[in-house]
Length: 60
Image 1 (tube, rainbow, N blue to C red):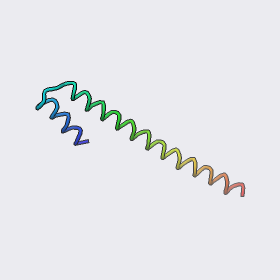
Image 2 (cartoon, rainbow, N blue to C red):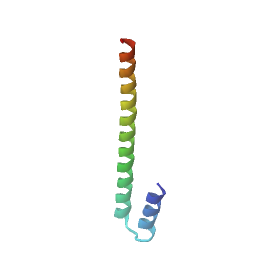
Image 3 (cartoon, one colour):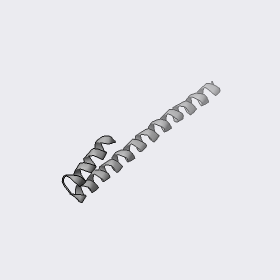
Image 4 (cartoon, helix red, strand yellow):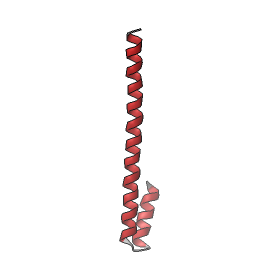
């Protein structure tokens, strides 16, 4: 996150370009959304496998 903070500060203070800052902000939002999606997918897969194992073990 510090990399994006530094890039955003540089875009505003050095280049003085609001649109560049907006692009960096959009990229951060996209990265965060992808992180949340991947994390939730991994958690769901883990618990789905755990539930399947428990059902299999119970009816064995």
